[in-house]
Length: 298
Image (cartoon, rainbow, N blue to C red):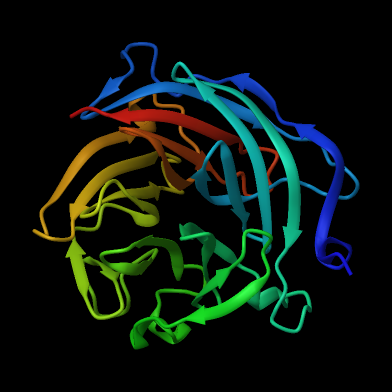
């Protein structure tokens, strides 16, 4: 029987996201900040459709005009996206799939806290919090296998909290699957990125919310820090060379300087020096789903 009857929340026609221009750059600045240039930034507004609510988009993965998004509640969204002339033009929801286990049962609440997303060949890697793990799944979300990760990452007791586990995952042919906790594990002072048999450390400037490979050796990293006392948010975009271990900050964006930031958690490469960054609205009326297109200045 066609699998969508079981697991796919299938849409009989396309659901367009309403794209509203949203300037994240302060009026007193130009679009340049450090070594990045903001090319476009928009707010995405979705309407509930057949019981589906697009919300809490935690990470994104791009391939051939398709944008896959993973939500905090174990839903994989697939969009057709049009980005031309450095503008985000349209976004169409093609389908939404609830993650299921190997026995085709819906994941329990503790197991469905999906956070990180990337491609491994034709399949998708998804990382999780609460029950920390990395899974390999088909692009229709069908479970394939559990990916082996460092022993320190397998037990939630090693983390700063159940919601501070594996926010990020990425893949390259050279280094394989790499992942990292949002905050350093107990006893660690710096961030550590883990591969199957290697580790890389770099200074902490907030929690790691996403990373993606820029090329075969360099990893582009997104860190976020929010103060509940001042309500200020800082986003740090940096890169780490896994071959030389060289770490450098490309940009620091801080709301105190007028940057209109939100809960940015997702990052993906879409072309030469071009990247998309997305924010998780936390299913809150007071937060927004923002999609930002930027380029790295060489």
